[in-house]
Image 1 (cartoon, rainbow, N blue to C red):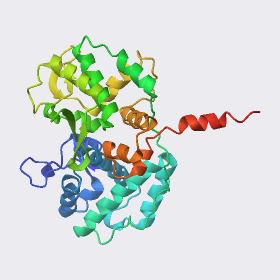
Image 2 (cartoon, one colour):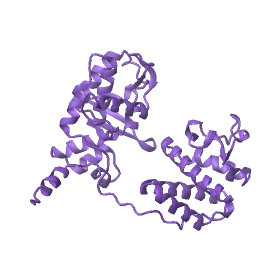
Image 3 (cartoon, one colour):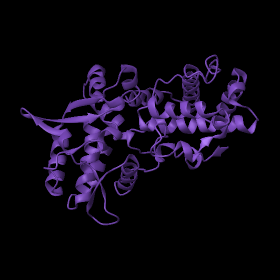
Image 4 (cartoon, helix red, strand yellow):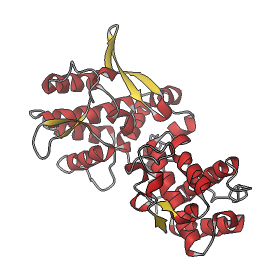
Length: 337
C-alpha cells in the first residue's frame, strides 16, 4: 500500500513531510502508492496538505489515518487517483458505516473531501469526487462523556496523597480540569507563567484549539492545589517551563518534559481505583463535564458555562450538562407496576 520515498523526506527538501509522529498512522512514514503513481506534483501537493493546511496536530494525525485507510481501500480495488469517482467514495462510506461509529465516518468523509479539494486547487485532479457524497446522519442532544457527581469528584481529589511531589502534581492537574472546565490538551500545554496574578486574582491562560488563548479566573481550591504543588517543585520561577511535568522513570522526581494527554489519562485511571471509582469509563474529559454539571447544579447559567469552557456554541456546552439525569430517574420511578 505504501512506498518509502526518501527523496521527499530529506531535511533540505522544501516539500518534506511532517514529523514521523504526525504521520505515525501512515505505515512507516511512507506515501500512499496511489499518490506516488500520480507523479511528483501529486506527492508535493499531498505533503503540502498536511504540512500547510492543518495546524492542529491531533487533527492532522486523525486525517492522516482516515486518508491512509481510504487510499488503502482504493488500492485493494485497483483504482488510481484520477479515476476515483463519487460512486467509489460512496461505497467506501457505506462500508465504513457498517464497522465504525457515525462521528468517525463523518470525520473520514471530511478528511477525504478536504484533501480532494486541495488536490483540485493544485490542478492534480479535475473535480472533487467527494462533494456529492453524503455521510450518515448524526444528531447528538446529550454527550456520552462519563460524569462524576460532585461527591465522587471530591472523593477522588481527597484520596490523592499530598506527601509526595507526584501526588501534589496529580491533585493540582485534576483540580485545574475540574474548576476551569479546561480540555486536557489546554492544561498540559500550560507553562508556569500561564498561572499568574492580576490584581488580587489569580488567572489561568489556557492554550486552546487553533492557537487561541483563553483566560479564566482561578477557583480558590485550584489555587490552593497549584500553590502547594509549585512550592514543592522548585521550578516556580522558571516561568517558560512546563507547568505539569512527567515523572523521571519510576522515580518520585519530575523530569523537564511536559506531560502528554496519554500520561494524564494513565494517571487518572490509576488514581480512580484506590478512590473507589470505576476506572473503565473515566477519562480526562470526565472532569470538564463534571465541572460544568456541578456549576449548573449550583445555579450557574448555561451562558456563563459556555464562556468559561470557551465553547463556540451553547449547544456544545449543553452536551456536558447532566443536571436533568436525576429528574429523569425520579420520573421513571413513578411507573408503579
